[in-house]
Amino acid sequence: MLEKLTVTNYALIRQLEMELSPSLNIITGETGAGKSILLGALGLVLGNRADTAVLKETERNCVIEATFDLDGLGLEPFFGENDLDFDRHTTIRRVITPAGKSRAYVNDLPVQLSTLKELSGRLIDIHSQNRSALVGDESFRMEVIDRLAGDEALRTAYRTCYTALRDREKTLQRLREETERNRRDEAYLRHEWERLSALALRSGETEELEQEQRELSNAGEILAALGSIAERFDREEEGLLSGLKATENSLLHLRDLLGAAAPLAERIDSAYVELKDIGSEIASLAERIEDNPTRLEAVDNRLGAIYDLRRRHGIETDDELIALEASFRQKLEAIADADGDMSELEAEIARLRTEAEAAAARLTEARREAAARFGRAVESVLARLGMNAARFEAEIAPLGQLAPSGADTVRFLFDANGGEHVVLQPLEKVASGGETSRVMLALKSIVARSTQLPTIIFDEIDTGVSGRVAAITGDIIAELSRTMQVINITHLPQVASKGDTHFFVYKEATPDGNATRIRRLSREERVVEIAKMLSGDTVTPAAMAQARELLGYTE
Image 1: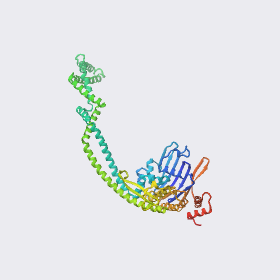
Image 2: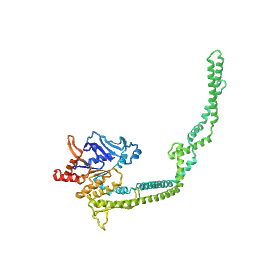
Image 3: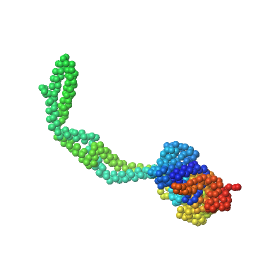
Image 4: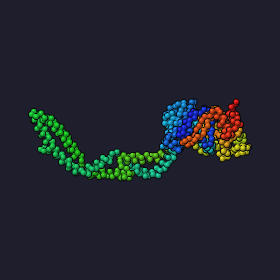
């Protein structure tokens, strides 16, 4: 339940704090005093979107905090799944900065707005005057019936089947489209794949061929240069090797006379060995290089074929050509396998559709049973509210196809005057504003008893009723508060008198302009407020007596 609400710098509210009782909390006040502003502030802390227009003072943050008692609600798994610290007395805080940034916190840990909405959806149901229009909303009507049916397991089973069915249908559609494209291009794919396959390209082959091409194209020049170098190494009189060997021998003759001669001789010997090895490699190169026009032509042709395919497909590397060949091969294989793959998918889809239809049928049966109970319950409450002849029916009709919510459509049918042969019409088309309010009160009172939500808020749901019906409306709301927390904004004294706690909202002039205030009324203040609601600003002794009677206060 909602234990405490604190609002700072929101609309006309500079600072406001209210502590609520666990049963029926009544909120009254003059029109324009700011009762609806309270709901707006609460909506923000529950996850509604906001902008800087809500700031009373544009240079300060707007901060709204709500503390909830979560005892017995089984929300520990939700907190764990969202990495939040569970506390029986959990505080939700929403901050709107002057720059327009919004931040949300649960027990001082930042959360996404979606997480905040999911949590608040398990804590509070708010019904304002404009929510009566929801009777024309198919998803709202379906939600009402499903809540009463208590069919979460059936809905989960259906959603699992439906999601799997739609997933496989999308897969089949993609496969059909892809196969159709590939078959249109099959001749092209096959021709290009055959060219690439025949090429049998190896990774890095082009680089090797280009090097070989350079060597073959310049074989004469290369051989001449290598021959000249080899001659310098091997000349007997003035060659590099013979000169080094002579130098080494001269140093060796000096080793007994000059200490540095031996190390120098060793270094020259090392250089001699290295140069001799280099000479051998040069000789080997000269033997490998050949002036071979036939091989050059073969290399040129091979490179030409590779370059041609590169240009044709707009790619630059061997690996890209190899990958393209694999891609074409896979597409051709997919074309060959497509009929079999599609047949398998179609069989799977048929099986999933049968399962989904069976799950939808079970859901329909549960909804029809709930709808029958719901219709009788609504008529019973409407009779208490002075609409003895009213007829109400929740009609579950075939949708004609599978949808995310099942295979049903829900209509709320209504007639205010009843009659044996009257054809009921959609509630949203035939009910007056007052009738719709009473139906919504009946609906909410029934649904609230079957839900685990700990708190419900009514914003003038009693609009359009008076007299005895107003008193019964108060009784129904009071009955709800025996099993859950109810916060009721009302203008009816008959309803206000049923509260366990009574808050009065008023507007006060300040040096900075009007400000919305709220205070919890004492026993005697409640009598005065109810009397004002009965007779206006001029409180008569008769109004005071009637107020005491409504409140059940005896001298």
